[in-house]
Length: 111
Length: 115
Image (cartoon, rainbow over all chains, first blue to last red; front, top):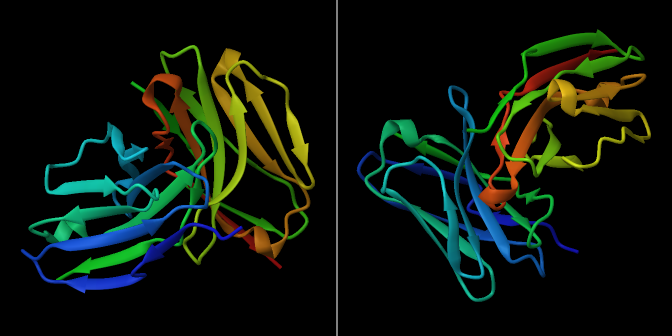
């Protein structure tokens, strides 16, 4: 079975721009979660989508948003980028209530 | 609120030594799940184990073993006869039943195994 894939793997953006990251879950997995990893804050939960509905949301500003499509693929969007948004963004997929499998991540650098 | 604490930020051992990683958690839920993940230098988080709150049985998988104790809210992880390939950052995480699949991670413990 193919694992979780994330595109792009690396991204460089300028402050004020917006960015969209994509995640394709493991086939059959309907839950997709997003996490931000930074040296200062560690791994933090952004949101979870299940069957195209946001099921849970972390403590991030409204500039961070996401969505899930009918094929379970998910995208997250960050608008008006700030330097502090530089991070590794990890996507994870799982069956309804089970262990999560992570993708390789997208490393975002904001300059 | 849920919280996971990994007090050890970095552990350095010589190959073949055993290493134990500590994890202490806080939750108000009676039903919850505990996890360990490994993050090698490549960056991808690799799932190692999941435990349910109602299953305190310890588990051994090859050189890995886990000790879950609800009485002390701890879920410790031991690598026996460590190898250089075990060098990575290890994360303990908690998921509450009421919070869907949201994982709360500890700060991680970096393990360096020297040859």
